[in-house]
Image (cartoon, rainbow, N blue to C red):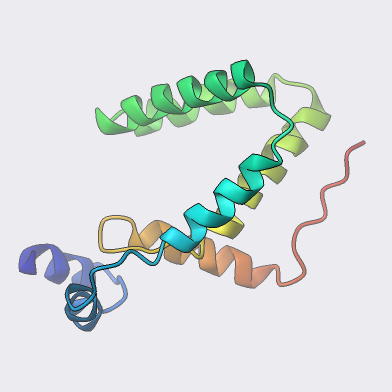
Length: 136
């Protein structure tokens, strides 16, 4: 763990030694609040169960490709499909991604996902009034 923390800090990540010490003193996961919020939203979810399954399956395919190191190829494939989609749907795609990033900025993190959370915080902070992306 010390090597991971040292590498994280050397690459410009937020200092995490104090954070990790603080985390070790607690037996709870602060992200539970985010999970509770998501469960509440999902209870009002208008998506049909078969659509939820398709989204889960798509995410699992993305996650698998990330896990085996196909980040560039995955990004290229997503971009290829995105730019060939209807312009309104392209904007809706990004609006959805920004919504995810906005909420992800409040997710509990450690050195494994800290860069992503910090990047999402910077993006959210750059747009304090949110994102205006109309459905046209």
